[in-house]
Length: 294
Length: 249
Image 1 (cartoon, chains in turn blue, orange):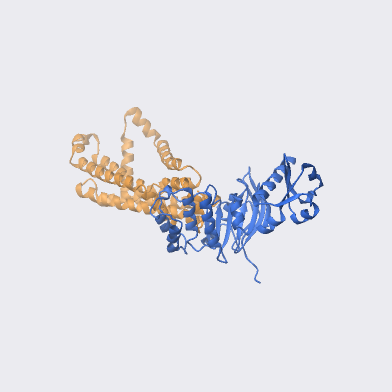
Image 2 (cartoon, one colour):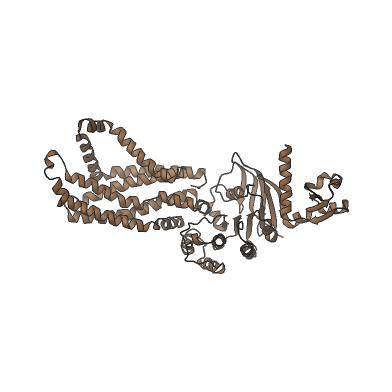
């Protein structure tokens, strides 16, 4: 079987802003996968995406896009990248029709038929200034543009934040359709883990500028679990399986990183599957605890 | 790169109504001014002053030079492009396009040159009408003046673009070259200014403006060479500043 190519590769990348540092992050995204880039606000997701798109310069490390280094000299690589930011980015007085004229002079593979079909599909008027669009419509407009130049990679920075569940669901459906093609890859940054749980194959979890967890989403969900037990039971749990814990009035919730072993070792405890959101929260708590102790 | 120029055209199109009114007004006032200087009230009001050295033709020519600058200024209003991009957060979208930093910067310079070209066409038409209705303005001399003024505008807008990429806010970027030119004029002409204020002696001022008019009309190549040099330096500095931020202006 042919080895799957990495579409995105970060190798020990450092970006230092003084008050915030992306601290030697390394991860990769395979061709044909959907990678959820999770982390709380300010964790470093947007910085990493900006580095990937060559919007800012890194201090050290290497970044590869489609196997080519991102070093300011390969701007043509972005021909195959569809980008969706958390803000629309187009001028409010522009209409989708005018955006089409701009974009067909930007991308060699721009397909205006696909763009206008996307507008229809997303119920977006083509003659109305996009300043009059709601946040959901603005995101859909960006997605329509990102999907209209035969992009092989979609890079999205918080595309669903601030949207109602109906629109979020519609957008997730669009991503699923895009992902159906074998060579299409998605890097989707979000702090709304529910969306990623539905669509992602891989997950990269970043916190405080460091990669905390990366790997196959299903494996991560299988490995982690919430162990619920009385407060005095915690001392009997091996520290090596504990990520972090939360004490409550009725007992303690412990996130463990080896669910199968814990089920065998602690049959008296209630062990429930954890969600990505719970995993994120417990890992953030762990980092904060470590910072406090340091 | 063409896409970025098209985007800038859409931005400037937003001001098209204002431009149209300014240009129509300027052309109308300029023609009326020339007519008045040649045949009308302006001519009558200064009659008899020629013996005292008052040169109505020079006054009209300087006024016409200002009128000719206006279509070029309004069409080359580059600072607003940076304001529009900033307000829309377009810099992120633009920087994600498959263009190098050099091309992104070049697109701004080309947009300006195209808009200046539109201003030149308007000025040529205005000069043709003015030279047809009066013998004060000669069409051949107007073309020299126009080339010199356009060269000055290229210098002005190139500096604005470079200052914007250097991170100076759009309003300051527009004001700085004007203030710098005014300060330079003040420093160079401080003696003449003193003379004019203390002794009511305007002779050296008058000579300066005659020389200036002469240079504008007959030696546009000086200004064109200077404009080419300044534009090239500003382009490379803009690329340098933009590349420091990876094209994010």
